Length: 119
Image 1 (tube, rainbow, N blue to C red):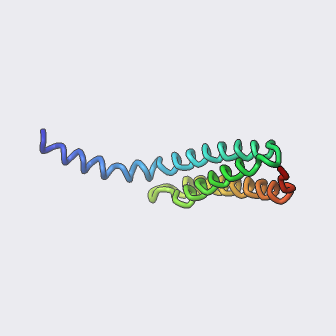
Image 2: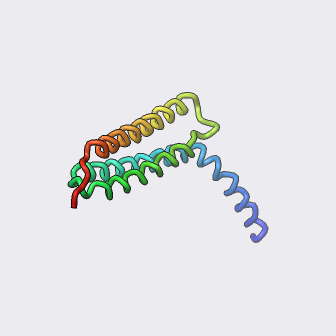
Image 3: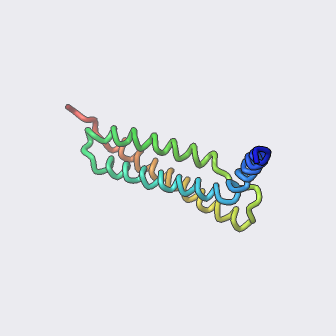
């Protein structure tokens, strides 16, 4: 029995990349989509907040966008995906990047339209 433990360990290590290649990319995109939704909620808070309180929300939002872009940069489809799967992945990835850019534009508009806060 003890001689089987290394066999199972090596087998599980060999299967991990295969599992990542087949489903890991989809899970990574799902995590980024969840981050996108959270970032959108923070941006809406910034848009609704009084001018003097927006900066806190916008700082949090920008950090979230940085995390999203970092994860999008690291994520790639597995090596054994079909052309159709690869194209579907690219479409999802592009939509997420477009959404990040849209949120950045909205935040930039908030920064440029706000008057300075006088306290």
